[in-house]
Length: 89
Image (cartoon, rainbow, N blue to C red; front, side, top):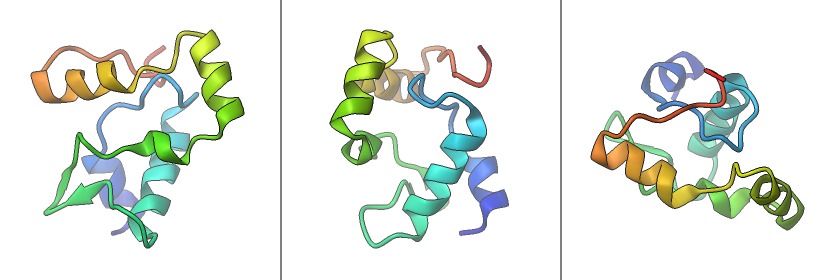
């Protein structure tokens, strides 16, 4: 999947990503990797568990800053609730 396609299909960045470009780079890399893919059939999979690639130190830092909440992020994608992305902040 091309980087341009990823940028068009990607949902807003979770709060734990400082800028949208960081999120897009991560998604592009994950899609090209051998693990579970964030996109399937031309759509982002809300159940994609990007947290598995997070280090314990980063997870702790993001938790302390109130930016680590996968369940709320996932719910915002599946329920249509507005999501405040780090890029918009």
